[in-house]
Image 1: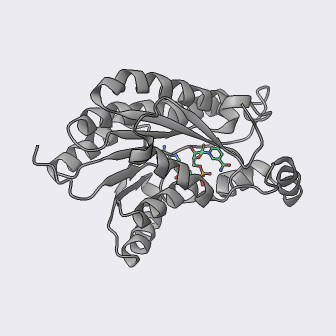
Image 2 (image 1 turned 45 degrees about the horizontal axis):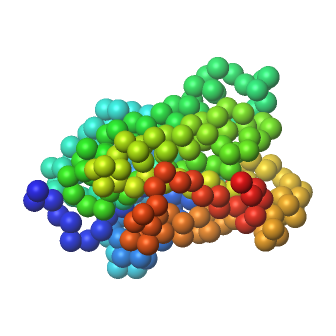
Length: 253
Ligand SMILES: NC(=O)c1ccc[n+]([C@@H]2O[C@H](COP(=O)([O-])OP(=O)(O)OC[C@H]3O[C@@H](n4cnc5c(N)ncnc54)[C@H](O)[C@@H]3O)[C@@H](O)[C@H]2O)c1
């Protein structure tokens, strides 16, 4: 193919902060080249992630990418093809959460959540799968949520998008499996990122939820990265279509 595939490469959406950033750093530390992407207003933050990764002697490319834009996705794939830059692993991490009861929810909020969290996963997979099929490890890891498994009051719209991600993971695993792909998902519980803290709203709620976990603590972004690395690794060669809870022991199904 002529694609440069000497070093394994991971592409991560929504990589400027939180879980996406922790995944980027974990893959860099594991020896992967990182392609970190996020929406345009985060491009300066992505530049400091690139510095951080280069500081530990690894390489990082950064691109502006809105996962709701088919045009931007197609352009990025074209740029990577032009630069002969392989993508072994795709991590669909970008997501949004605004709290609202179903009663108070605005139609625009419903649409925005489905656009980023569900359609974004489909569009990104649709854009990248044909390119990844040509070379590399062919691993896709989607970010669902515990909310998508059990539903959470104030998050009906968000939970529905994440249930959609679990379903998309199962279907993509079956459709892309014959071409050598594995497609799996992670379901984080409460992770103390900007999103996680906004979700809980107060220190009292953090303490309450810490007490509800088997491990008596909430997650840090780094707690999530290990499962993503596992799904990308040869140890997970025969695992596909699965969604795994990463929640310190809140939900056991
Ligand atoms: N933090 C939690 O408790 C938690 C729990 C379960 C699932 N998740 C999921 O994990 C993922 C990361 O969450 P986080 O806690 O790091 O959130 P975060 O808000 O800290 O980061 C989300 C990232 O997504 C990016 N993003 C938003 N819209 C985008 C778009 N249209 N295109 C590309 N990027 C976009 C943001 O710029 C940001 O970098 C999300 O999918 C989220 O739903 C988080």
